[in-house]
Image 1 (tube, rainbow, N blue to C red):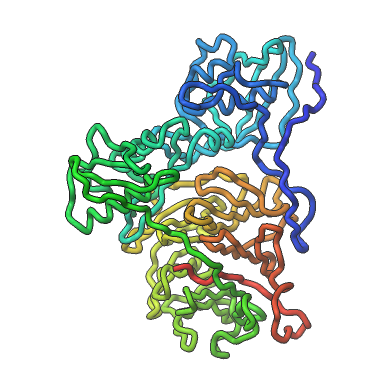
Image 2: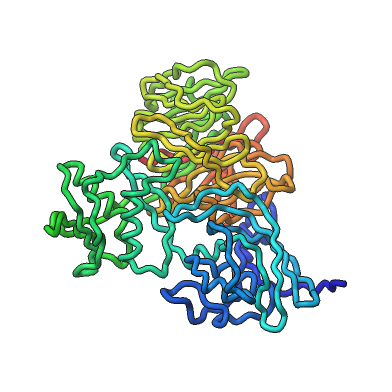
Length: 565
Protein backbone atom coordinates (compact mmCIF):
# COMPACT_ATOMS: atom_id res chain seq x y z
CA UNK A 1 0.00 0.00 0.00
CA UNK A 2 1.35 3.41 -0.97
CA UNK A 3 1.90 6.13 1.56
CA UNK A 4 1.53 9.77 0.54
CA UNK A 5 4.41 11.90 1.74
CA UNK A 6 3.81 15.32 3.20
CA UNK A 7 4.02 18.06 0.60
CA UNK A 8 7.69 18.76 -0.19
CA UNK A 9 8.96 22.30 -0.10
CA UNK A 10 9.20 22.88 -3.84
CA UNK A 11 10.29 26.41 -4.67
CA UNK A 12 8.28 28.50 -7.10
CA UNK A 13 8.80 32.01 -8.39
CA UNK A 14 6.18 34.23 -6.85
CA UNK A 15 5.74 37.58 -8.56
CA UNK A 16 4.76 40.69 -6.67
CA UNK A 17 1.10 41.56 -6.88
CA UNK A 18 0.23 43.98 -9.64
CA UNK A 19 -1.75 46.51 -7.65
CA UNK A 20 -4.74 46.67 -9.96
CA UNK A 21 -7.35 49.33 -9.30
CA UNK A 22 -10.55 47.39 -8.81
CA UNK A 23 -9.13 44.37 -10.62
CA UNK A 24 -8.24 41.98 -7.82
CA UNK A 25 -5.76 41.10 -5.13
CA UNK A 26 -3.50 38.29 -4.07
CA UNK A 27 -0.15 36.99 -5.34
CA UNK A 28 0.58 36.33 -8.98
CA UNK A 29 2.47 33.04 -9.38
CA UNK A 30 4.73 32.50 -12.35
CA UNK A 31 4.44 29.37 -14.43
CA UNK A 32 8.20 28.91 -14.15
CA UNK A 33 9.54 26.43 -11.57
CA UNK A 34 12.71 27.47 -9.78
CA UNK A 35 14.58 24.21 -10.02
CA UNK A 36 17.08 23.36 -7.28
CA UNK A 37 19.55 21.52 -9.48
CA UNK A 38 22.84 23.22 -8.73
CA UNK A 39 25.28 24.12 -11.45
CA UNK A 40 28.32 21.87 -11.60
CA UNK A 41 30.72 20.30 -14.07
CA UNK A 42 28.96 19.93 -17.39
CA UNK A 43 29.13 17.70 -20.40
CA UNK A 44 31.52 18.55 -23.21
CA UNK A 45 30.83 21.95 -24.77
CA UNK A 46 29.12 23.59 -21.78
CA UNK A 47 25.72 21.92 -21.99
CA UNK A 48 23.61 20.63 -19.09
CA UNK A 49 25.42 18.87 -16.21
CA UNK A 50 25.86 15.12 -15.83
CA UNK A 51 23.91 13.48 -12.99
CA UNK A 52 26.94 13.03 -10.77
CA UNK A 53 27.56 16.81 -10.85
CA UNK A 54 24.08 17.77 -9.63
CA UNK A 55 23.10 17.91 -5.95
CA UNK A 56 19.72 16.27 -5.52
CA UNK A 57 17.74 16.58 -2.27
CA UNK A 58 14.40 15.00 -3.19
CA UNK A 59 12.80 13.01 -6.03
CA UNK A 60 11.07 16.06 -7.52
CA UNK A 61 14.43 17.80 -7.87
CA UNK A 62 15.69 14.81 -9.82
CA UNK A 63 12.82 14.96 -12.29
CA UNK A 64 13.20 18.71 -12.76
CA UNK A 65 16.92 18.29 -13.40
CA UNK A 66 16.17 15.50 -15.89
CA UNK A 67 13.88 17.86 -17.81
CA UNK A 68 16.89 20.13 -18.36
CA UNK A 69 19.35 17.37 -19.22
CA UNK A 70 17.97 16.84 -22.73
CA UNK A 71 19.35 20.18 -23.95
CA UNK A 72 21.52 19.45 -26.94
CA UNK A 73 20.16 15.87 -27.07
CA UNK A 74 23.44 14.47 -25.73
CA UNK A 75 22.31 10.97 -24.77
CA UNK A 76 25.31 10.52 -22.47
CA UNK A 77 24.01 13.33 -20.27
CA UNK A 78 20.40 12.18 -20.36
CA UNK A 79 21.30 8.54 -19.66
CA UNK A 80 23.40 9.56 -16.65
CA UNK A 81 20.12 10.29 -14.85
CA UNK A 82 18.76 6.79 -15.53
CA UNK A 83 19.59 3.46 -13.92
CA UNK A 84 20.82 1.17 -16.72
CA UNK A 85 20.68 4.28 -18.91
CA UNK A 86 22.75 2.76 -21.72
CA UNK A 87 19.69 0.77 -22.83
CA UNK A 88 17.30 3.75 -22.71
CA UNK A 89 16.43 5.20 -26.14
CA UNK A 90 14.00 8.12 -26.44
CA UNK A 91 11.50 8.73 -29.19
CA UNK A 92 12.57 11.25 -31.87
CA UNK A 93 11.90 14.95 -31.32
CA UNK A 94 12.89 17.33 -28.52
CA UNK A 95 9.60 18.45 -26.93
CA UNK A 96 9.52 21.78 -25.07
CA UNK A 97 7.06 21.67 -22.17
CA UNK A 98 5.69 23.94 -19.48
CA UNK A 99 5.41 22.43 -16.01
CA UNK A 100 1.87 22.70 -14.66
CA UNK A 101 1.50 24.05 -11.13
CA UNK A 102 0.92 23.13 -8.38
CA UNK A 103 3.27 20.17 -8.41
CA UNK A 104 2.02 16.94 -6.88
CA UNK A 105 3.84 15.48 -3.90
CA UNK A 106 5.63 12.21 -4.73
CA UNK A 107 4.34 8.93 -3.37
CA UNK A 108 6.40 6.27 -1.60
CA UNK A 109 6.79 2.88 -3.29
CA UNK A 110 8.70 -0.29 -2.46
CA UNK A 111 11.52 0.77 -4.79
CA UNK A 112 11.55 4.43 -3.79
CA UNK A 113 9.18 7.13 -5.10
CA UNK A 114 6.80 7.92 -7.93
CA UNK A 115 6.62 11.48 -9.22
CA UNK A 116 3.58 12.40 -11.30
CA UNK A 117 4.11 15.47 -13.43
CA UNK A 118 1.61 17.32 -15.59
CA UNK A 119 3.05 19.37 -18.44
CA UNK A 120 1.72 21.41 -21.34
CA UNK A 121 3.41 20.65 -24.64
CA UNK A 122 4.49 23.91 -26.29
CA UNK A 123 6.37 22.71 -29.35
CA UNK A 124 9.01 20.49 -30.91
CA UNK A 125 12.47 22.00 -31.40
CA UNK A 126 13.59 20.77 -34.82
CA UNK A 127 17.01 20.55 -36.50
CA UNK A 128 16.55 24.02 -38.01
CA UNK A 129 16.11 25.65 -34.58
CA UNK A 130 12.38 26.14 -35.14
CA UNK A 131 9.92 25.59 -32.32
CA UNK A 132 7.05 23.92 -34.15
CA UNK A 133 3.76 24.34 -32.20
CA UNK A 134 2.54 21.16 -30.54
CA UNK A 135 -0.98 19.78 -30.72
CA UNK A 136 -0.46 17.37 -27.78
CA UNK A 137 -1.87 19.72 -25.16
CA UNK A 138 -1.52 18.81 -21.47
CA UNK A 139 -0.18 15.33 -20.65
CA UNK A 140 0.63 13.49 -17.46
CA UNK A 141 3.93 11.62 -17.01
CA UNK A 142 5.00 9.16 -14.32
CA UNK A 143 8.63 9.07 -13.19
CA UNK A 144 9.94 6.27 -10.96
CA UNK A 145 12.81 7.24 -8.67
CA UNK A 146 15.16 4.84 -6.88
CA UNK A 147 15.62 6.00 -3.31
CA UNK A 148 19.22 5.01 -2.63
CA UNK A 149 20.87 7.06 -5.38
CA UNK A 150 18.04 9.35 -6.44
CA UNK A 151 18.16 8.07 -10.00
CA UNK A 152 15.37 7.40 -12.49
CA UNK A 153 14.24 3.93 -13.49
CA UNK A 154 12.75 3.45 -16.97
CA UNK A 155 11.45 7.04 -17.47
CA UNK A 156 8.95 7.96 -20.23
CA UNK A 157 10.35 7.72 -23.77
CA UNK A 158 9.35 11.26 -24.77
CA UNK A 159 12.43 13.51 -24.94
CA UNK A 160 11.26 16.47 -22.85
CA UNK A 161 12.92 19.77 -21.99
CA UNK A 162 11.41 22.32 -19.62
CA UNK A 163 11.06 26.00 -20.51
CA UNK A 164 13.85 26.85 -18.06
CA UNK A 165 16.09 24.30 -19.77
CA UNK A 166 15.37 25.90 -23.14
CA UNK A 167 16.14 29.36 -21.75
CA UNK A 168 19.32 28.30 -19.95
CA UNK A 169 20.90 26.16 -22.67
CA UNK A 170 19.62 27.67 -25.93
CA UNK A 171 20.02 31.20 -27.27
CA UNK A 172 17.11 32.83 -29.10
CA UNK A 173 18.74 33.84 -32.40
CA UNK A 174 16.30 35.16 -35.01
CA UNK A 175 17.19 34.96 -38.67
CA UNK A 176 15.87 37.60 -41.07
CA UNK A 177 14.28 37.64 -44.51
CA UNK A 178 13.30 40.47 -46.82
CA UNK A 179 9.64 41.16 -47.55
CA UNK A 180 9.69 44.08 -49.94
CA UNK A 181 11.72 46.75 -48.15
CA UNK A 182 11.13 45.22 -44.70
CA UNK A 183 13.39 42.81 -42.81
CA UNK A 184 11.18 40.20 -41.17
CA UNK A 185 12.28 38.31 -38.05
CA UNK A 186 12.01 34.50 -37.83
CA UNK A 187 12.76 33.14 -34.35
CA UNK A 188 15.27 30.28 -34.00
CA UNK A 189 17.15 28.62 -31.14
CA UNK A 190 20.80 27.54 -31.08
CA UNK A 191 22.74 25.73 -28.38
CA UNK A 192 24.70 28.06 -26.09
CA UNK A 193 27.35 25.35 -25.95
CA UNK A 194 28.36 26.34 -29.50
CA UNK A 195 30.82 29.14 -30.17
CA UNK A 196 29.53 32.29 -31.87
CA UNK A 197 31.24 31.14 -35.06
CA UNK A 198 29.50 27.76 -34.92
CA UNK A 199 26.17 29.42 -34.13
CA UNK A 200 26.66 31.78 -37.06
CA UNK A 201 27.41 28.93 -39.46
CA UNK A 202 24.17 27.24 -38.40
CA UNK A 203 22.22 30.46 -38.98
CA UNK A 204 23.77 30.89 -42.44
CA UNK A 205 22.88 27.32 -43.37
CA UNK A 206 19.30 27.84 -42.20
CA UNK A 207 19.07 31.09 -44.17
CA UNK A 208 20.18 29.48 -47.43
CA UNK A 209 19.13 25.83 -47.16
CA UNK A 210 16.12 25.74 -44.84
CA UNK A 211 14.41 29.07 -45.40
CA UNK A 212 11.71 30.72 -43.30
CA UNK A 213 9.10 29.20 -41.00
CA UNK A 214 6.04 27.81 -42.74
CA UNK A 215 3.83 30.75 -41.79
CA UNK A 216 6.30 33.17 -43.44
CA UNK A 217 7.22 31.13 -46.53
CA UNK A 218 4.93 32.83 -49.04
CA UNK A 219 5.51 36.39 -47.86
CA UNK A 220 9.33 36.71 -47.82
CA UNK A 221 12.12 36.41 -50.40
CA UNK A 222 14.81 33.74 -50.59
CA UNK A 223 18.51 34.61 -50.57
CA UNK A 224 20.40 34.66 -53.90
CA UNK A 225 21.63 31.02 -53.98
CA UNK A 226 24.78 31.73 -55.97
CA UNK A 227 26.18 33.77 -53.06
CA UNK A 228 26.05 30.90 -50.55
CA UNK A 229 29.41 30.40 -48.79
CA UNK A 230 31.43 27.27 -49.45
CA UNK A 231 32.74 24.82 -46.85
CA UNK A 232 34.33 27.57 -44.74
CA UNK A 233 31.45 29.91 -44.05
CA UNK A 234 32.01 32.15 -41.04
CA UNK A 235 35.12 32.80 -38.92
CA UNK A 236 36.15 35.34 -36.27
CA UNK A 237 38.38 38.07 -37.67
CA UNK A 238 40.26 41.07 -36.30
CA UNK A 239 38.67 43.59 -33.92
CA UNK A 240 36.08 40.99 -32.93
CA UNK A 241 34.44 41.16 -36.33
CA UNK A 242 32.73 38.17 -37.88
CA UNK A 243 33.97 37.34 -41.39
CA UNK A 244 31.85 35.65 -44.04
CA UNK A 245 33.21 34.59 -47.44
CA UNK A 246 30.56 34.40 -50.17
CA UNK A 247 30.91 32.40 -53.38
CA UNK A 248 29.66 35.16 -55.67
CA UNK A 249 28.56 38.77 -55.72
CA UNK A 250 25.20 39.88 -57.05
CA UNK A 251 24.60 43.38 -58.47
CA UNK A 252 23.57 46.25 -56.27
CA UNK A 253 21.09 46.94 -54.74
CA UNK A 254 20.59 43.18 -54.15
CA UNK A 255 24.09 42.82 -52.70
CA UNK A 256 23.43 45.79 -50.40
CA UNK A 257 20.23 44.13 -49.17
CA UNK A 258 22.04 40.82 -48.64
CA UNK A 259 24.67 42.60 -46.51
CA UNK A 260 21.96 44.14 -44.31
CA UNK A 261 20.22 40.78 -43.97
CA UNK A 262 23.38 38.93 -42.96
CA UNK A 263 24.47 41.60 -40.47
CA UNK A 264 21.05 41.75 -38.84
CA UNK A 265 21.09 37.96 -38.43
CA UNK A 266 24.71 37.37 -37.40
CA UNK A 267 26.02 40.38 -35.47
CA UNK A 268 25.26 40.10 -31.75
CA UNK A 269 27.33 41.20 -28.73
CA UNK A 270 30.25 40.92 -28.23
CA UNK A 271 30.75 40.94 -32.02
CA UNK A 272 31.59 44.39 -33.40
CA UNK A 273 30.42 43.96 -36.99
CA UNK A 274 30.48 41.81 -40.11
CA UNK A 275 33.18 41.76 -42.77
CA UNK A 276 31.88 40.44 -46.10
CA UNK A 277 34.24 38.85 -48.61
CA UNK A 278 33.58 37.38 -52.03
CA UNK A 279 36.00 34.54 -52.89
CA UNK A 280 38.52 35.94 -50.41
CA UNK A 281 38.31 39.60 -51.48
CA UNK A 282 36.90 42.14 -49.02
CA UNK A 283 33.78 43.81 -50.40
CA UNK A 284 32.41 45.37 -47.19
CA UNK A 285 34.80 45.85 -44.29
CA UNK A 286 32.38 46.49 -41.42
CA UNK A 287 28.66 46.02 -41.98
CA UNK A 288 26.53 46.98 -38.96
CA UNK A 289 23.05 45.62 -38.22
CA UNK A 290 20.13 47.92 -38.86
CA UNK A 291 18.89 49.54 -35.63
CA UNK A 292 15.10 49.11 -35.39
CA UNK A 293 14.73 50.69 -31.98
CA UNK A 294 12.45 53.69 -31.46
CA UNK A 295 13.11 56.11 -28.62
CA UNK A 296 10.26 57.76 -26.75
CA UNK A 297 6.71 56.95 -25.76
CA UNK A 298 3.79 57.21 -28.19
CA UNK A 299 0.77 59.43 -27.66
CA UNK A 300 -2.21 57.69 -26.07
CA UNK A 301 -5.87 58.23 -26.80
CA UNK A 302 -9.26 57.04 -25.61
CA UNK A 303 -12.92 57.53 -26.44
CA UNK A 304 -14.49 59.66 -23.69
CA UNK A 305 -18.28 59.87 -23.74
CA UNK A 306 -18.26 59.10 -27.47
CA UNK A 307 -15.49 61.57 -28.41
CA UNK A 308 -11.79 60.85 -28.95
CA UNK A 309 -9.37 62.54 -26.51
CA UNK A 310 -5.64 62.56 -25.91
CA UNK A 311 -4.57 60.95 -22.67
CA UNK A 312 -1.20 62.70 -22.44
CA UNK A 313 -0.20 66.34 -22.26
CA UNK A 314 -2.11 69.36 -21.03
CA UNK A 315 -4.73 69.26 -23.79
CA UNK A 316 -6.60 66.09 -22.83
CA UNK A 317 -9.89 67.96 -23.12
CA UNK A 318 -9.20 69.39 -26.58
CA UNK A 319 -11.48 68.33 -29.43
CA UNK A 320 -9.29 66.56 -31.97
CA UNK A 321 -11.92 66.32 -34.71
CA UNK A 322 -14.77 68.48 -36.00
CA UNK A 323 -17.85 68.23 -33.79
CA UNK A 324 -19.95 66.40 -36.38
CA UNK A 325 -17.29 63.70 -36.73
CA UNK A 326 -16.30 63.48 -33.06
CA UNK A 327 -19.47 61.86 -31.76
CA UNK A 328 -20.87 58.36 -31.26
CA UNK A 329 -17.37 56.93 -31.61
CA UNK A 330 -16.56 53.37 -30.55
CA UNK A 331 -12.88 53.42 -31.65
CA UNK A 332 -10.26 55.80 -33.06
CA UNK A 333 -6.74 55.37 -34.45
CA UNK A 334 -4.22 58.15 -35.15
CA UNK A 335 -1.28 57.61 -37.47
CA UNK A 336 2.21 58.68 -36.43
CA UNK A 337 2.34 62.38 -35.47
CA UNK A 338 -1.43 62.57 -36.06
CA UNK A 339 -0.90 62.84 -39.82
CA UNK A 340 -4.15 60.92 -40.36
CA UNK A 341 -6.96 59.44 -38.33
CA UNK A 342 -9.55 56.66 -38.64
CA UNK A 343 -12.66 56.46 -36.51
CA UNK A 344 -15.40 53.88 -36.04
CA UNK A 345 -18.80 55.51 -35.60
CA UNK A 346 -21.97 53.87 -34.31
CA UNK A 347 -25.10 54.44 -36.39
CA UNK A 348 -28.06 52.58 -34.94
CA UNK A 349 -27.34 48.85 -35.07
CA UNK A 350 -24.44 49.16 -37.53
CA UNK A 351 -21.02 50.79 -37.59
CA UNK A 352 -19.09 52.69 -40.23
CA UNK A 353 -15.43 53.55 -40.72
CA UNK A 354 -14.20 57.04 -41.59
CA UNK A 355 -10.68 58.02 -42.59
CA UNK A 356 -8.73 61.18 -43.48
CA UNK A 357 -6.97 64.15 -41.95
CA UNK A 358 -8.09 65.65 -38.66
CA UNK A 359 -10.06 68.41 -40.36
CA UNK A 360 -11.79 66.29 -43.00
CA UNK A 361 -12.94 62.66 -42.86
CA UNK A 362 -14.60 60.55 -45.54
CA UNK A 363 -16.69 57.43 -45.14
CA UNK A 364 -14.85 54.29 -46.22
CA UNK A 365 -16.42 52.37 -49.10
CA UNK A 366 -17.51 49.28 -47.18
CA UNK A 367 -20.87 47.57 -46.76
CA UNK A 368 -22.70 48.23 -43.44
CA UNK A 369 -20.94 46.35 -40.65
CA UNK A 370 -22.25 45.04 -37.35
CA UNK A 371 -18.83 45.27 -35.72
CA UNK A 372 -15.61 47.09 -36.68
CA UNK A 373 -12.52 46.57 -34.52
CA UNK A 374 -9.68 48.96 -33.71
CA UNK A 375 -8.07 50.17 -36.99
CA UNK A 376 -4.30 49.56 -37.26
CA UNK A 377 -2.10 51.92 -39.28
CA UNK A 378 0.48 50.24 -41.51
CA UNK A 379 2.49 53.40 -42.19
CA UNK A 380 2.55 57.12 -41.49
CA UNK A 381 -0.97 57.74 -42.72
CA UNK A 382 -1.76 56.27 -46.14
CA UNK A 383 -3.17 52.81 -45.37
CA UNK A 384 -4.41 50.66 -42.52
CA UNK A 385 -5.80 47.23 -41.71
CA UNK A 386 -9.08 46.72 -39.92
CA UNK A 387 -11.12 43.70 -38.87
CA UNK A 388 -14.80 44.05 -39.69
CA UNK A 389 -17.40 41.25 -39.44
CA UNK A 390 -14.81 38.42 -39.66
CA UNK A 391 -13.03 40.01 -42.63
CA UNK A 392 -9.69 41.86 -42.77
CA UNK A 393 -9.76 44.95 -44.99
CA UNK A 394 -6.88 47.10 -46.21
CA UNK A 395 -8.06 50.71 -46.38
CA UNK A 396 -6.40 53.61 -48.16
CA UNK A 397 -6.50 57.27 -47.21
CA UNK A 398 -8.73 57.73 -50.28
CA UNK A 399 -11.46 55.75 -48.52
CA UNK A 400 -11.24 52.69 -50.72
CA UNK A 401 -11.25 49.29 -48.98
CA UNK A 402 -10.06 45.93 -50.25
CA UNK A 403 -10.99 42.65 -48.56
CA UNK A 404 -7.73 40.79 -47.88
CA UNK A 405 -8.99 37.89 -45.79
CA UNK A 406 -12.36 36.39 -44.97
CA UNK A 407 -12.17 33.81 -42.20
CA UNK A 408 -15.03 32.23 -40.30
CA UNK A 409 -14.48 32.50 -36.55
CA UNK A 410 -11.96 35.38 -36.85
CA UNK A 411 -12.60 37.70 -33.90
CA UNK A 412 -9.36 39.60 -33.22
CA UNK A 413 -6.38 40.95 -35.18
CA UNK A 414 -3.00 42.47 -34.32
CA UNK A 415 -0.18 43.56 -36.63
CA UNK A 416 3.53 43.43 -35.79
CA UNK A 417 5.66 46.53 -35.97
CA UNK A 418 7.17 45.37 -39.27
CA UNK A 419 3.69 45.29 -40.82
CA UNK A 420 4.22 41.68 -41.95
CA UNK A 421 3.45 39.45 -38.97
CA UNK A 422 -0.17 39.00 -37.94
CA UNK A 423 -1.68 37.54 -34.78
CA UNK A 424 -5.22 36.27 -35.32
CA UNK A 425 -7.75 34.88 -32.88
CA UNK A 426 -9.74 32.22 -34.76
CA UNK A 427 -12.36 30.15 -32.94
CA UNK A 428 -10.79 31.10 -29.63
CA UNK A 429 -7.26 30.01 -30.62
CA UNK A 430 -4.14 32.05 -31.37
CA UNK A 431 -2.82 31.76 -34.92
CA UNK A 432 0.08 33.44 -36.74
CA UNK A 433 -0.12 34.62 -40.34
CA UNK A 434 1.82 36.99 -42.57
CA UNK A 435 1.34 39.79 -45.11
CA UNK A 436 3.23 39.77 -48.36
CA UNK A 437 4.87 42.90 -49.76
CA UNK A 438 1.82 43.21 -52.05
CA UNK A 439 -0.52 43.32 -49.05
CA UNK A 440 -1.88 39.80 -49.50
CA UNK A 441 -2.51 37.83 -46.30
CA UNK A 442 -1.23 34.26 -46.33
CA UNK A 443 -2.61 31.82 -43.78
CA UNK A 444 -0.98 28.65 -45.09
CA UNK A 445 -0.94 25.71 -42.69
CA UNK A 446 -2.71 26.78 -39.47
CA UNK A 447 0.11 27.85 -37.14
CA UNK A 448 -1.71 27.80 -33.81
CA UNK A 449 0.25 28.69 -30.70
CA UNK A 450 -0.33 26.68 -27.50
CA UNK A 451 -1.27 28.85 -24.52
CA UNK A 452 -2.44 28.32 -20.97
CA UNK A 453 -5.87 29.61 -21.96
CA UNK A 454 -8.87 27.47 -22.74
CA UNK A 455 -10.18 30.24 -25.00
CA UNK A 456 -8.50 33.44 -26.24
CA UNK A 457 -10.34 36.74 -26.64
CA UNK A 458 -7.69 39.20 -27.90
CA UNK A 459 -3.97 39.50 -28.66
CA UNK A 460 -1.58 42.37 -29.36
CA UNK A 461 2.06 42.48 -30.45
CA UNK A 462 4.01 44.02 -27.59
CA UNK A 463 7.74 43.55 -28.03
CA UNK A 464 10.44 45.50 -26.26
CA UNK A 465 13.48 47.24 -27.71
CA UNK A 466 14.91 45.39 -30.70
CA UNK A 467 12.66 42.36 -30.13
CA UNK A 468 9.89 44.06 -32.06
CA UNK A 469 8.03 40.91 -33.05
CA UNK A 470 8.91 38.47 -30.36
CA UNK A 471 6.20 39.09 -27.77
CA UNK A 472 2.43 39.24 -27.47
CA UNK A 473 0.02 40.26 -24.77
CA UNK A 474 -2.92 37.86 -24.81
CA UNK A 475 -6.30 38.01 -23.07
CA UNK A 476 -8.26 34.84 -22.49
CA UNK A 477 -10.07 32.55 -20.10
CA UNK A 478 -8.60 29.58 -18.26
CA UNK A 479 -10.13 26.20 -17.52
CA UNK A 480 -12.05 27.79 -14.62
CA UNK A 481 -13.62 30.38 -16.94
CA UNK A 482 -11.84 33.31 -15.29
CA UNK A 483 -10.40 36.05 -17.48
CA UNK A 484 -6.73 37.08 -17.32
CA UNK A 485 -3.91 38.76 -19.25
CA UNK A 486 -0.66 37.06 -20.22
CA UNK A 487 2.60 38.29 -21.77
CA UNK A 488 4.31 35.62 -23.89
CA UNK A 489 6.72 35.03 -26.73
CA UNK A 490 5.06 34.48 -30.09
CA UNK A 491 6.14 30.83 -30.09
CA UNK A 492 4.24 30.18 -26.84
CA UNK A 493 7.21 30.18 -24.46
CA UNK A 494 7.65 32.28 -21.31
CA UNK A 495 3.97 32.90 -20.57
CA UNK A 496 3.66 35.24 -17.60
CA UNK A 497 0.47 36.45 -15.94
CA UNK A 498 0.17 40.24 -15.83
CA UNK A 499 -2.62 40.51 -13.27
CA UNK A 500 -4.72 38.26 -11.11
CA UNK A 501 -7.61 36.61 -12.96
CA UNK A 502 -10.91 38.42 -12.97
CA UNK A 503 -14.25 36.75 -12.30
CA UNK A 504 -16.03 34.55 -14.81
CA UNK A 505 -18.10 35.95 -17.64
CA UNK A 506 -16.00 39.09 -18.31
CA UNK A 507 -14.66 40.11 -21.72
CA UNK A 508 -11.66 42.03 -23.04
CA UNK A 509 -12.78 42.84 -26.55
CA UNK A 510 -10.34 45.67 -27.16
CA UNK A 511 -6.59 45.21 -26.54
CA UNK A 512 -3.80 47.38 -27.97
CA UNK A 513 -0.05 47.59 -27.34
CA UNK A 514 2.92 49.64 -28.37
CA UNK A 515 5.31 47.23 -30.13
CA UNK A 516 8.44 49.05 -28.97
CA UNK A 517 7.88 49.90 -25.30
CA UNK A 518 5.75 46.83 -24.58
CA UNK A 519 3.09 48.94 -22.84
CA UNK A 520 -0.52 47.89 -23.34
CA UNK A 521 -4.03 49.21 -22.85
CA UNK A 522 -7.33 47.40 -22.89
CA UNK A 523 -11.06 47.77 -22.42
CA UNK A 524 -12.75 45.63 -19.80
CA UNK A 525 -16.54 45.71 -19.56
CA UNK A 526 -16.62 49.13 -21.25
CA UNK A 527 -13.87 50.75 -19.13
CA UNK A 528 -10.31 51.55 -20.25
CA UNK A 529 -7.22 50.35 -18.39
CA UNK A 530 -3.47 50.53 -18.89
CA UNK A 531 -1.01 47.75 -18.07
CA UNK A 532 1.93 49.11 -16.12
CA UNK A 533 4.85 47.55 -14.31
CA UNK A 534 3.26 48.35 -10.97
CA UNK A 535 -0.29 47.38 -11.91
CA UNK A 536 -3.30 48.14 -14.10
CA UNK A 537 -4.76 51.63 -13.83
CA UNK A 538 -8.16 52.89 -14.91
CA UNK A 539 -7.35 55.63 -17.36
CA UNK A 540 -10.26 57.74 -16.16
CA UNK A 541 -8.59 58.07 -12.77
CA UNK A 542 -5.54 59.89 -14.16
CA UNK A 543 -7.17 62.09 -16.82
CA UNK A 544 -8.25 65.69 -16.68
CA UNK A 545 -11.70 64.93 -18.04
CA UNK A 546 -14.07 67.32 -19.78
CA UNK A 547 -17.56 67.88 -18.40
CA UNK A 548 -18.87 64.48 -17.27
CA UNK A 549 -21.78 62.80 -19.00
CA UNK A 550 -25.42 63.11 -17.90
CA UNK A 551 -24.98 60.60 -15.08
CA UNK A 552 -22.16 62.65 -13.60
CA UNK A 553 -19.44 60.17 -14.64
CA UNK A 554 -17.53 60.06 -17.91
CA UNK A 555 -17.12 56.79 -19.73
CA UNK A 556 -13.54 56.18 -20.90
CA UNK A 557 -13.22 53.34 -23.42
CA UNK A 558 -11.38 52.15 -26.56
CA UNK A 559 -7.83 53.23 -25.60
CA UNK A 560 -5.22 53.41 -28.38
CA UNK A 561 -1.62 54.35 -29.17
CA UNK A 562 -0.60 56.49 -32.11
CA UNK A 563 0.81 54.60 -35.09
CA UNK A 564 4.45 53.56 -34.87
CA UNK A 565 5.74 54.18 -38.41
